[in-house]
Length: 176
Image 1 (cartoon, rainbow, N blue to C red):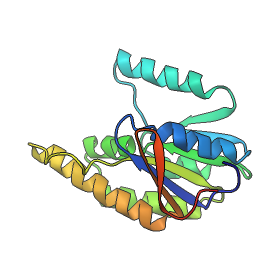
Image 2 (cartoon, one colour):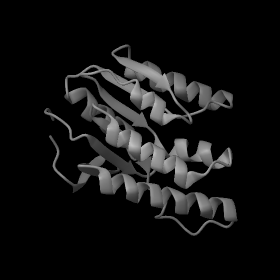
Image 3 (tube, rainbow, N blue to C red):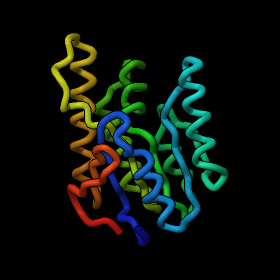
Image 4 (tube, helix red, strand yellow):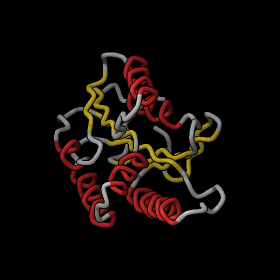
């Protein structure tokens, strides 16, 4: 898999589906310098270990930027010629939800930043709508907001790929 990516690519799937690894392979295949924008916040030892493991697996060829909330600013720092991976929209949305931010306004700001980005961006997101209806209001709100965000990202993306059991399935566009 080589070639150029559209301005925006959405890679979506369930937990442990292989979506992040697939997204990394898309960015790597461009041959461009790679920027990884991480949205995770490490609040406990398990998450700190997970972040360290992922950073080590990516290796030094990636410039890593931590942006748990301000993706617009992180995207604006992308350098000409780079390819950017945002991993992931789900943790970013969670961070804003838990901070009680205006999710609609934050999503609009993110979409504007993506549209204005001068380098190709691959954004990873979780598909949260295939499970049962959550039992509590916060979980239902999160599921609904994630679904709305995913729809907005997919509408703007030139390439949308779902990954299930490590296997990519193109939903929109064509793989490079």
